[in-house]
Image 1 (spheres, rainbow, N blue to C red):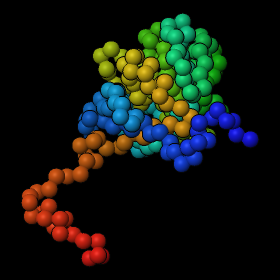
Image 2: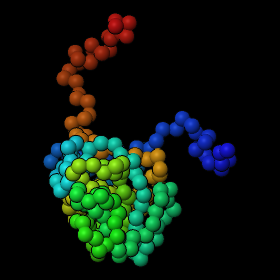
Image 3: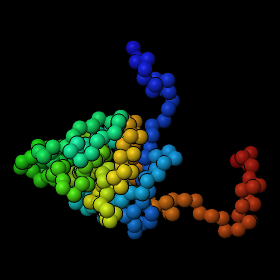
Amino acid sequence: MSDPHDVTDLRPNAMPEILEVQADSADSTLGWASLGARRWRCVLGAGGVREDKVEGDAATPAGEYPLRRIYFRNDRLVLPRVRLPARPINRQDGWCDDPRSPAYNRLVHIPNDWSHEKMWREDGLYDLLVVIGYNDDPPEGEWGSAIFLHIARDDLSPTRGCIAFARDDLLELVTLIGPKTRVNVHSLPKAETSPRPSDGDDDMKQFEDFDERDW
């Protein structure tokens, strides 16, 4: 029996939310992320946005992916109310980035025999992060690991493949996303995906005269 307080039962045809992410240009590591009518500046990987991402290329993977869970430093911030699963980071948390490991692209306990990065960082980048469900169901090959939404550096320098936001922007964003939210990273910048303007009035005229019955 469904929960009478679960409003999602009243909206069976509701579409999942999509967090759209797009670079400013093919050469830029800056972009915009939008969710409905809201939009935030974001930083992408130093290796650009790639459909053929591999481990260590510093690229942000193109495509559409789910959002898994939130990790945060409870000694540095108070997490607002969120809908995704969340837990604090501790000093023994790491993330395995070694494709040879059975724990590849997974949270691991450190010390650990496999290559990994520390989740407990002094630079503040992982004070708040959201795990993107990239190459994790299950992890395969050397297609990349540890792809997160996280806090950007003050100078907005490129990431190693993650999508980074100003601290306050990410704190706002995590209150809006939920289990149905997916992130869609576009492989081409907006300028290259927008429709090209018409070259003249004659070109517009052919569309004005077009009638579906002509088909």
